[in-house]
Length: 372
Image 1 (cartoon, rainbow, N blue to C red):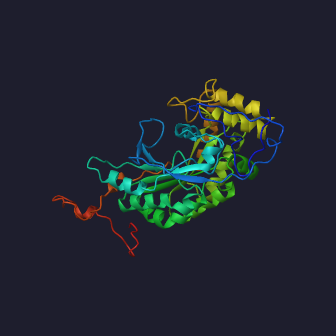
Image 2: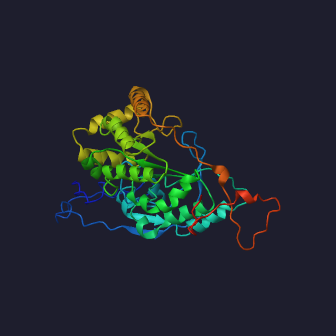
Image 3: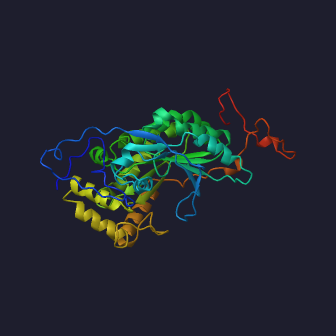
């Protein structure tokens, strides 16, 4: 059996079926020479995703939010380590190249969000926007779905946090800046490595590391609370850069920081392992040995309390290094967002509330729906 050449601009080494597939296929040389030929460019296909609700709730004790919105399924950034890859199996697709090239979006997500925010029993808490897949991936430039969701959240004065690798977030500074003045938004820029060559291999369609540092500066200049998320830390491959990433991000404008240790759930085990042996054959065994060390002898650990930071001596060493660098660089705590400012705007047909507090209504300036 031969391994097909990698596709330019894509990270996954193949398109193996997901765990729910009834069939498994293997490539082999049938004598026609097609296996060794370079693959044709892979075009991105976008389809509509229907959902009855747009806000997803969780009860996890080790993440700082209890609800999130994911405008897209799949992610064209193509990060080989992405923990969300296995979710494509639920769609009958591959967590490999399908995850990077067969995307789904929810065109009615803003309308659904309005309905859920206006529900009588809804109580506001910060929403994390774009957690499984990047809300600012390349397709957002054309569809503008994330921007429309932000417009709804701004109108309702609802707090939101964002994590992204994309410079496209700068497009929405006109929304984020007034929200920041009201204490309604925080942003974390994900930086895995400062090595452009390594980043191009791991995250082929995400912004270059140096561009992400520039994004931090732009957010800082606009007054938007900005931090860095070193995620994931890949033992041996990227963990030596931990202090360098934190220092570069702090100098660029990051005020707070966090990190996440690599874990490899379901099909991601094989995908990442194949990629590692293809890209870094001399380091592959060492990397995987360290991953097992921080994951209790496995390549994945989904247990609360350890899934984000790992366990064992190696994980404790990384945690201590982060703590020392965090203190030395004078990073601050993650900002608190203001849920009490949530406000449901009146619309035609609404019944007036006899006891409504007129001072709770949002102010606007310059006719741009900008919060003061």
